[in-house]
Amino acid sequence: MDREPIVRSFGGTGDGPGRPGRDPQTGTLADRVAALLDTEVRRAAKAGTSHDWTLSYVELADGTRLFVKSQSRGPEPAGALAAEARGLEWLGRCFGSPVLQPLGWDERLLVLPLVEQDEPTPAAAERLGRQLAGTHLTGADAFGADWPGYIGPLPLDNTPARHWPRFYAEQRLRPYLRQALDQGALTPTDARAIERVVDSVEELGGEPEPPARIHGDLWSGNVLWRSRDAVLIDPAAHGGHREADLAMLALFGLPHLDRVRDAYNEVAPLSAGWRGRVALHQLHPLLVHVCLFGAAYRTTALEAARTAFRST
Image (cartoon, rainbow, N blue to C red; front, side, top):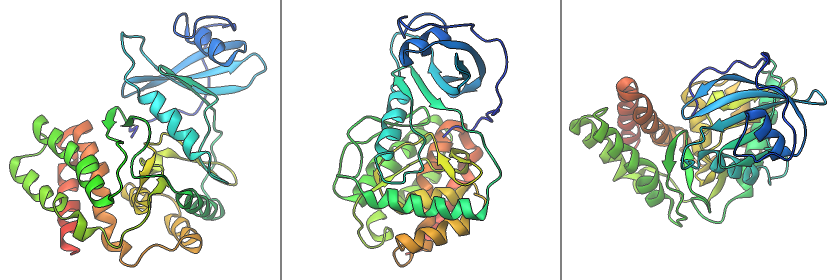
């Protein structure tokens, strides 16, 4: 759910060299990465910020370049980086997974390979569609996950559940509707319109499906294109409904989305009526955006709620 632009270049003198053996919770960023990876770091350079964490580029002694997300060393880490790392590792256990794998992590630091990006191509999009289908089909033990979740900086209730409509209504929609209302980003009238959908997920959700292994925050900014494929980053991974990932890819637009979806359907055909449920699945990330960015997303969230309810 990172909305700030990230520059994908490396530069700056940064922290200077870091060496293994230092406490990963103290010292410069270079020292902390060196201790975490048990290798020498030549330099680290800050690239910007996103939500509650700092984004940096790190160069190892052998010239390898890495991407690092770090959290300020306050009294208690929020847990978002640990949740992201666990989600990446869980998604990466699928054969042919397109998810980028962490090189090291703790509660305040997440180290990833630096992705050299390229222009998206139809062939890369088709490969992504097949890989995403395979990831979803790997499945999950339940809706939710075994670790506390986050979507961006916001907590995400991952308490395992067996019944998707109730899980989606009570753990994905209602908490963010309540928060948006409390923040004043939605009015009581707005909330009532959205509550009609929350109360009707059972009727709106289509035929029951088993838990899929989903990315959970699959907007286009979390798809990094390379010359022959794409990799996925920044998940809010959990057992969920597979239509949620595809709906979110459509929410902010993705190059060659039709190619992704067609290739997906060849491997794991979507259930009848899926087009009528896109707005239902988009309502969760839109409510999260209302909570994070205020009333700028109010109109879009309300329109999604009206569209979802009209699909009955």
